[in-house]
Image 1: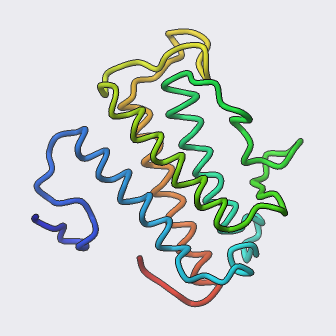
Image 2 (image 1 turned 60 degrees about the vertical axis):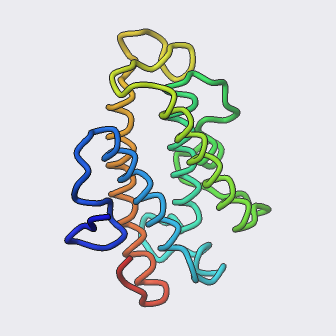
Image 3 (image 1 turned 180 degrees about the horizontal axis):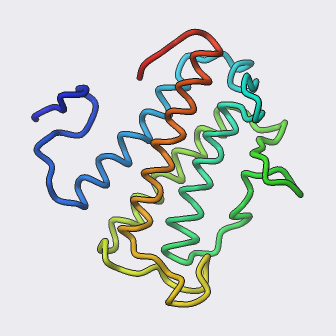
Length: 175
């Protein structure tokens, strides 16, 4: 396997097929998020050090719902309970219920990522999202490729946010 000049864990530089690149980079960033949280004390996972107020655990729960909203409810039009369940009731602020354990949030995240992989594997990048879930009309329905790129940029942004949160929490830097 030929590694990236940026790091051994990044997808190989020999990948050229768009589907392989998208899948590899989505999985790369999914793993980056988990690595950023690995070793953090529970108090640090549940504490915000940022003016906006979000916590690392809230961010990973948000990403689980991003996966759910875009791949399951969005692309596959599967009925999902509370597609916006990452927000506190009556607000747009990310939220983790007080009774949710760190393990349950991480398990939910992993399950949503696994389901997203299944949904994406069953379609072509040029396929349009089904209507009846997130999208009401065929004109509103993006392609799977568009959804993958959208989710990828969401991960890239939030991985950077987690870099800052982790450094502020315990001084750890890097991937």
